[in-house]
Image (cartoon, rainbow, N blue to C red; front, top):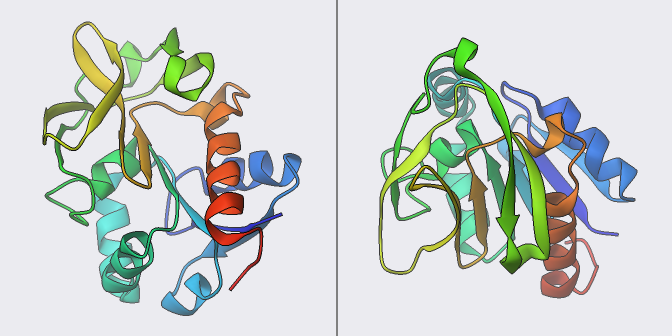
Length: 189
């Protein structure tokens, strides 16, 4: 199975690691640039985007993350991970996000989203979730809530405004592992 890096600066990285391990993947928590060496895929979890930005800057992770993703490694961003990938942050996904778009924590909700591009419906947990306010032509919108994109794909990047790890949903993690296996032949390095 592939070796997946999970950005572990802040947020619910442990839950993502647990889901990936449950699917048989090797997992490495990424806190420094050296932790990216040899990973076959990457998860940028939900959390607080300002805190994550500061941690990425502090650890010198910005450019190493950009190089990894631009090299074609499959990448999954969830909630704040979507924000971290956008134009204003790491600049890897041609989208502009609106933070806390659905409202504060008390406005959190769950919904079943149809994601035919990933094989069907997923249970989505939205907690202080963003939405995609604007996107470029190369960005494929996979799902919307109330007319707002909440799941997008561009090349090797899949980014969603929700927390699949909070509902026990594995579809997105399975996509990441499948992409990492086919892109890297299942070999780390």
